[in-house]
Amino acid sequence: MPGINTGSLMDDVITINHGAGGRQSHELINSLFVAAFGMPVPLTDSAIIEDAENTLAFTTDSYVVNPVFFPGGDIGKLSICGTVNDLAVSGAFPKYISASFIIEEGFPVESLRKIVESMAAEAQKAGVKIVTGDTKVVEKGKCDQLFITTSGIGMLRRDRAGISAGVLVSQGDKLIINGSLGNHAIAVLGSRNKLSFTTPVISDCAPLNHMIDKVLEKCKMIHFMRDLTRGGLSGVLNELAAICQKGIIIDENSIPVDDPVRGACEMLGFDPLYLANEGKILIVADSSESETILNILKSDPLGRNPAIIGEITGQVDGKVIINTLTGGKRIVDMPSGVQLPRIC
Image (cartoon, rainbow, N blue to C red; front, side, top):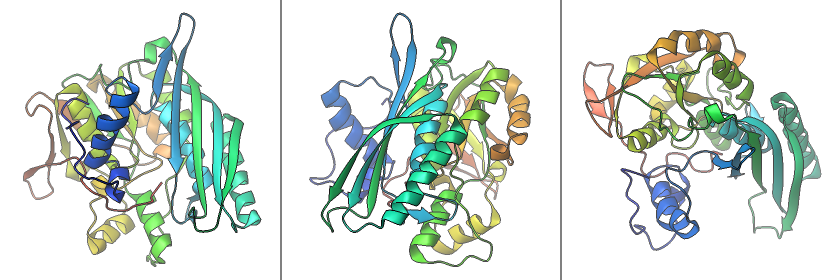
């Protein structure tokens, strides 16, 4: 990926940081997998596959969240929503999903039943079908309860094929998110560590394809979309700046963060810009359509607190700058290391 070091790995062994979605993840992916498999760059959330008659989007992801049940969801719901959203932010209509399970011996059948029913419910909400899969059981201690891998296929209209690659991004484009940051990460953290919040924090995990489709149907100058999962907003913005080799300026006072999440971050030393979300996307669009997009998002239950948080600029090529609440400016770096492991 342009602007990201793709040289030799900095470590002799895999560390937890290589799975965090930040700089180490990119180094691992680009220097090892991309090089060996001949993948096109920049990488996108879904591979775009074209032939003479069809354009398809194809994506895959694995889920290892700990705990497997958390406020607002579970590993099954997460796996469906994550795959649906990866397809949708590529501009595709999600259609079919495969699901593979690695189950630790001793995992309760009733828990598995709840997770499978959750997957079925989310697939129905999203309008997709789970059509194939695989199941493996490993000895106790060889897997942490349950891991799920889902892959998805979506149909992509040719006029939307450039959205995921960022090739359409232009100076002056506005950056829009559909709601508050950090809820998923803090919900999982609280459940994992049995933390008690004055106001409960619920994961934002949800399938966003119907909301995204409403935006794409009304607005024809959407230049980029990405869901704000591992690495959070900071990770996506730095990826985008590297892809388009343009600068990005965001305003801290425009970025929505719910008070309970902000309080938890202040207490625990986290930055909401780096926290994982499972129901939030970044939309980059021509400034002429930004208000229309805001109104569409506000009309949807999954976009109740949207905001224009910044814009693309030609002033600081390849960098992300934030105007802080105190009136200063600072660089927002690509995440390095991991704030919260096993978050998705």
